[in-house]
Length: 167
Ligand SMILES: [Zn+2]
Image (cartoon, rainbow, N blue to C red; front, side, top):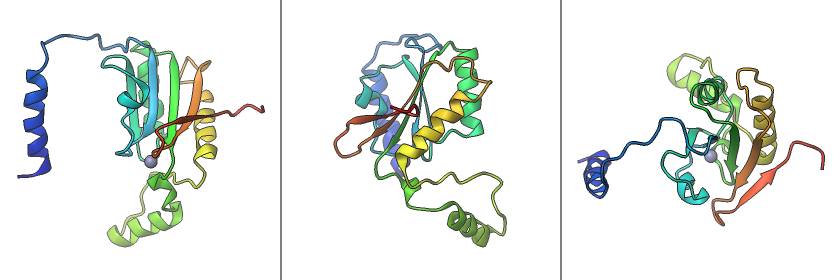
């Protein structure tokens, strides 16, 4: 029995606890959140979010890749979101590798260098600033007035806002 089998059992109990209902496909809070895949960040609990309220886009690092831009373009242009919240966090796995070393590792293991950028970083705040700028500079994303970035502390559970503008 794999852990996934356990989750399937959990889902039966979860579904049994709810009356069937239908929420709209467009997030009711008109918000998209981009964050890391980190297993310690429970986005819904940490932000007091409910089902149907926001899009949550996750990848290694919470990095603004072409695919995240693709999802934000769909989120805003087809599903009505207006605000973008970016969340990196302390003790991120992306701070424990470098682009060059991981690229070399992949090439040595497979014979093929990846076409994608690794997007590692050392300073989470600096990478949040980079991410805010990438969103703000993408014409594919029509609503860029509210693009805010944060670092979440995985130990204290607190958000710290990062500004790109000179204070
Ligand atoms: Zn992370």
